[in-house]
Amino acid sequence: MREPMKSSIPIAMPDLTMDGLCYRVEEKDILHGLTASIRDNRIGIVGRNGSGKSTLARLITGLISPTAGTVRLNGTDLSHNRKAALSEVGILFQNPDHQIIFPTVEEEIGFGLRQQGRTKDDATATTQHVLDQFGKPHWAQAHVSTLSQGQKHLVCLMSVVAMRPNMIVLDEPFTGLDIPTKAQLVRYLSHYQGGLIHITHDPADLAGYGQVIWLEKGTLTAVGDAHAVLADYTAEMTKQGGLDDISDLSS
Image 1 (cartoon, rainbow, N blue to C red):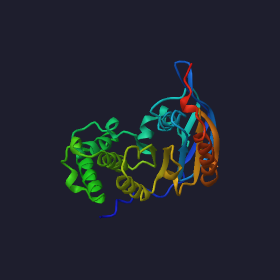
Image 2: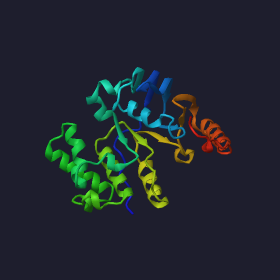
Image 3: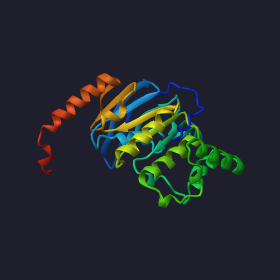
Image 4: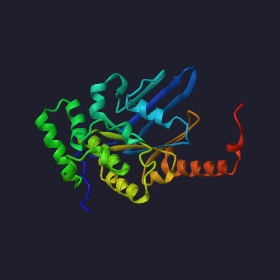
């Protein structure tokens, strides 16, 4: 198999800063008072389901705005600067069907490039280059509806990489994938030279990451060196696994 494309982006050291970051929906706090400053090329965000991880991903990328406080990526509040967001960050959602909007692979990859202001010819040439570099030139005319879930994830990744963002946010990208498909996507991502923020409940997904944010019920439990934070997180999740709170009924 041909090796996946290597991003031409120089290795960066992204700066993620949160100051009193809050997000509330219908009087319910999803995230409350997040304050931290992290600089690393590989940042992980871990926590149980419902801890606010996906909400934080959308705040970082500027898809939604905080109800209080700020979050800045490389000094920019992306919710207030959508033009900067197109070059600063891309996102891979948990379900590729929530991201893909065009019928063919080449149309899907080319869409983001046109959003950046590229000419039609430039977008077409860049799309073909990305397909070539990923070893998938024969996918250009393929209909997305015929692809497997893992192949759709790869289309989303190619679409984001084509736009050459400084950072990619991965929101539980391995959910529902079998072991070989996950291993292939991990290999593709390992060649990406821009920054990665990887959101997951599984600490094994963050092997080789430098800094980790641990969210619990919308608040920061820990932020720091990945090895130390993930060890504490794993111990706490193992402890909670020994409880029987699943059997408790809500009042």
